[in-house]
Length: 74
Image (spheres, rainbow, N blue to C red):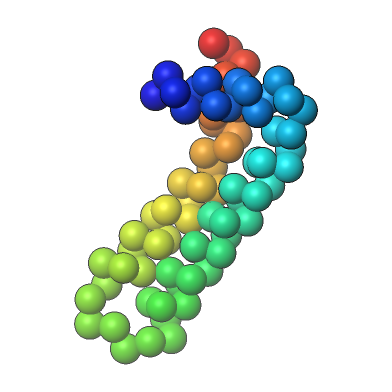
């Protein structure tokens, strides 16, 4: 966890936190939409893959804000 906070602190110091935050959110949105598409529009018998994609997408949408807040508090 310390390594992640070090990377986030480095990104925040470089001034690119807005760009990195939005890139991570876009990846999260793509994963969320991909999981939703697999779940709704395909005949997958195994629902683990869409569920994992949905969960990862939600985490990536929320994680940048939480990590930047934790880096500012630390």
